[in-house]
Length: 508
Image 1 (tube, rainbow, N blue to C red):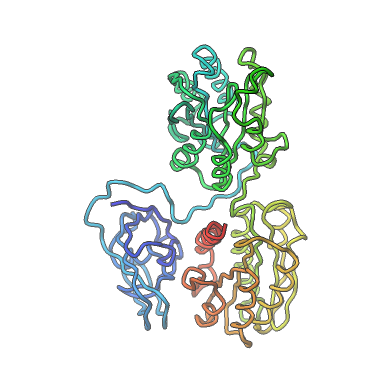
Image 2 (image 1 turned 180 degrees about the horizontal axis):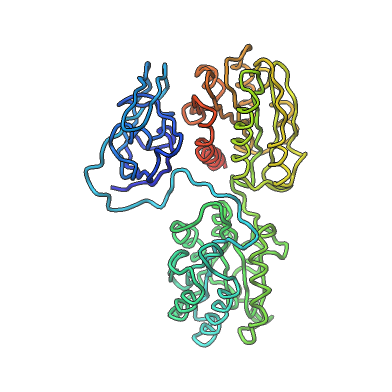
């Protein structure tokens, strides 16, 4: 059995397999998780909350078998094992939970709902050091290369809360020496590097980059932290780097080249692709390369290279969901919400926005508040600095009034998105509402989706399921969220961000 670790807020709708073995963390009863139904649960329910309610696990967590079922009507609410489940008139999909009979033999590295904040100024990066272990470099220069990266590891101040480093070797066949989480102290990394043995063979750097993307970065990676492959090349590579570099970019991984002892003029005829450096990096602007003339006397290059690697804002250029989407928040400001609950809505949408890399060349955020009327709070161009955008969201004043959600969707489509052209899977409208709309929502929602806008519906309290699912993009179940209480909104932050990233990845 392969178990997938999930969080307390992972819903049945977030799971992809019909039958799946998941691992719930402890203390889910301390969260305000939403559970709808008894024995058979609506897919909008927290899986771990349902498992506690059913008695499958206790507050300490554990493995749970989940079986996805068709939707139904009249989910019954009940109190069981310290969890109050709620009644629900109907939902489009269901699931059941059961105890895991067998002890799982393998744990998947994929966490179902994980999005960490963007990295801070202390160089919290995931770095793969790709060493040249070919015949080109030879044993003596290989040892000098190891000495150099040992000094680099110390200069980077590797630690549990700082950068993590692992080592891969490029030769005929790539070889992982140690992973990011194997050693988290500089002295341990230095010792591990000292033990790395020289391989010899061809300089199959492209093959090694491919291996690093597909294998090395699949284990022990802190989500949301920039991932960089620092490629050391003595002379020139034996194979093609372009395809591997494209794969790295599409996976959100930056390739940083450190060419040492470039080929002499008389050796250029032996170089397979003279433009390999331009093709390997995502931007040929000088930020993604650091040339060293020789392996001798490299100490003076340690600090400049470390500083360059830690220039996160300049280094991040690979396109991922975090730095490539336009987020439009459509916020219900009707009188039924009230000032206090309106603040909880703002806290929720700010938490969602905080997960993305907002900048003038990255993701953008805009917001519209609506009652019977609509008010543009700010558009996608107003706040290209992340902190400013987050403050603007928090500072939105409450309107109060009626609820015309359909008109608001049409207004957001025209005024938030159509002025900012984007590729497929880049425009997202998150609608947060607590009640029945007085106008039609179907027509405006379909028009928005025809313009390439993906809609997520987030309903609270008395928001009718029909309206929420009518507005939501397909598949409806994974684009619709509902909670009875405004305090329950925060549980949707991670699933919503993960859904946006899933949509972006599938479209791109």
